[in-house]
Amino acid sequence: MMESVVVALISGGLTLLGVLISNDRKQAVTDAKLEELTREVREHNHFAQRVPVLEEQMKVANHRIGDLEAFHKG
Image 1 (tube, rainbow, N blue to C red):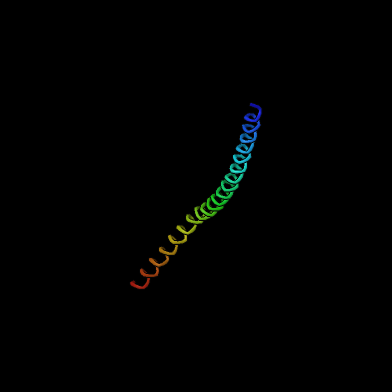
Image 2: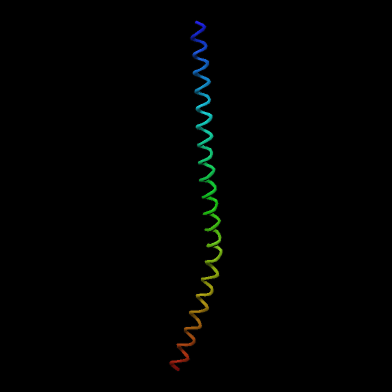
């Protein structure tokens, strides 16, 4: 009977150790993925801030082209 208890305790301890190691590795992978996603979001936010500036510049450029075309025709 005592042997059964010792075997159960050893098995339980090894199982717990395996679970802890597995969770640690999964956490490292999750942290790496989260870091990559954070980097991508920052890049996207920077791009999203630049789009209105580019749209305004295109609007001005199109207006200037229109003016030049009207001047050339007239």
